[in-house]
Length: 487
Picture (tube, rainbow, N blue to C red):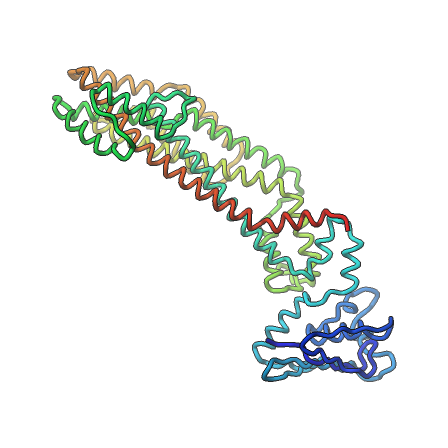
């Protein structure tokens, strides 16, 4: 480990000719009356380590090291030498001369240039005299807390991603629960859990004269047994195709729900645009955040865009102020993106279900779906493609209105009626109907419950991650709380 060992200074600020400072292993306390040169040693140490002098190189009133760096009674330029070393070797660092090229020395000088080793009296006074809400900024440079700001930004991005995953899985779970409610005829007030589903399935099995099942893991075997009994009936294959088709159509995602999700996206987009309209010009959050990271990472003293000289501290403070000012806009944009993701996810789920219906319809009827359904599939494809990215508010409103109009058109009820008419052509028995109903209940539970369990597991995992991320960000909340305490 590199340690400071000795500081030699002559003709520097208030130091005419030493004395030299020996730091020793336990440090050094430098005491003296006002005007005896204590601060000059600090200036000398800063100059030799960083090449700058914070008390002079401020640009105020013509102050600068070139004019005020030397002692007023000396005609010589300031002479500063710092002896550093480890247990095996010493190195000399001198103002105006090349520094030793060893890796430890280079690393030490790079760290020193960040100036986080120096807590000046003016910094403490600025902290004491600042308003409570501004005290954090008064010592931010010394404490080097920008790395925590970067960490917090990453944590928030991960937390936002998890929240979006939770929202998408909740949407998936809701769609699957709707399918189960429709197939098992569950009341809207009934909870969709394993016990409730088993109770409904077992009631259907009992009506068909079949034994109850104890858990959802028994469903695949029970389906095979029911199929074996159904094969005893004539024309089973044709009837099964129609029954499967009828089940698939009954389980299609609710069009009302799609219209509701589209309406939620429209409202979120409208609120975001309203907030953005209050801005002058366009606010690019990512540009500010990435620019701040760039300045911090490379310790820039020039703007990375225009290459003009900048005060990095002031720029970073201003960036944070602007980000804080527009926090509500960030939250609205997150809500908007989540609503859009939910809409696209729900529509794609509906499209997958409709394409399966299309395939099964062709098998059962030897023809394509009615033109009204094909037109609806085309329109859903257009909506999913359009809203893969942010769209104009008027387009969102148009698509939401079309979904609402389609939900009330009743074309699904029309094709279900066609299937019922086709089923009447085949000989029917009560036993066959009960077996077919039992199989439909078993199949629906097998498909939907597995997806619900998966969605619940992913939601729980995402919530645990959010909790961990929030725990990682507790330091920021504690910091904000401390900022508001009176001195």
